[in-house]
Length: 336
Ligand code: AMP
Ligand code: MG
Image 1 (tube, rainbow, N blue to C red):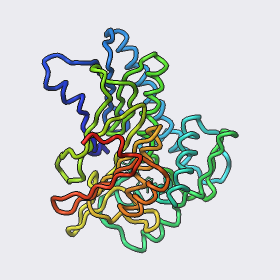
Image 2 (image 1 turned 180 degrees about the vertical axis):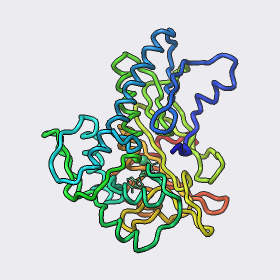
Image 3 (image 1 turned 120 degrees about the vertical axis):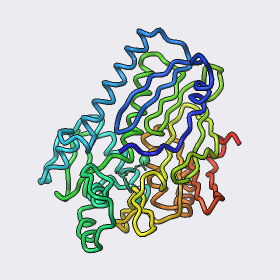
Image 4 (image 1 turned 90 degrees about the vertical axis):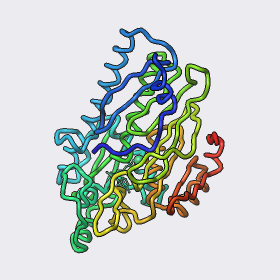
């Protein structure tokens, strides 16, 4: 399920051009993609190895809780339940489901982690179904088991439950962001104060680069099959995420269907090639909102982001030109 990422790590590319790395990095694989931690300050090999072990252990724990690709994960077991009982849930799963619920409400249902059955139906899920356009009758049947209102998380009671036994939760639109936040938390606890964490294109920065400058990343244009860098943004102590319709597509009869599903239509979003980037206090929020804005589309997504004071950038492609909409809160991050 490795997907295209919509960012270019500018610091990383400058490393590639030099004979000697400018700053230490920790790399690995998680959630069907890769991660990179860039550290501004030098670090002994032993300390870096220890840090890498802590990060890998945390990411493995997140996968054991939230992966729908692991049938034994906590989430897969919850999905398999046929009853409406409250069940105790791990802290991380509670936190993510609670945030997901708030963002579902705030996005008028555009963000909905119960789209799992539709994601599978369209061939983007862990069942690896053939990727083709399903029959209308099947879409109508499957959409009945979707609805974020049917999922409840009670953080104070430490429990979750289904209010409709058919729902299936898919956290692919938010879990990477949560993972980035947890890696950042480990770095903070270890006394590391200048870093950039990236999992599959979702980011979190703190402090500055080795040169004492803000971390900079290039946001790529929504162009299928090619990497074209557009805006360059600076990140303070914040997270950022980008989603796009050109990321992972089903192609049939000349039409392209993206992996992001509009819960209202039960079909992949139909806008033109589009990317949405969000900068927020946590990468989890940025991740979920970036997906939500794709569902809402360039106009409604922009209006809602602006009204909520979200730092968001929505880029749509028409031919070789791009329409770039930047909310007031995002503008301060732009570096030309
Ligand atoms: P992202 O790459 O963060 O935009 O997440 C996209 C993934 O989230 C898809 O591959 C699906 O697994 C899942 N997904 C698709 N549509 C939605 C939606 N409307 N709300 C929440 N998750 C979704
Ligand atoms: Mg997302």
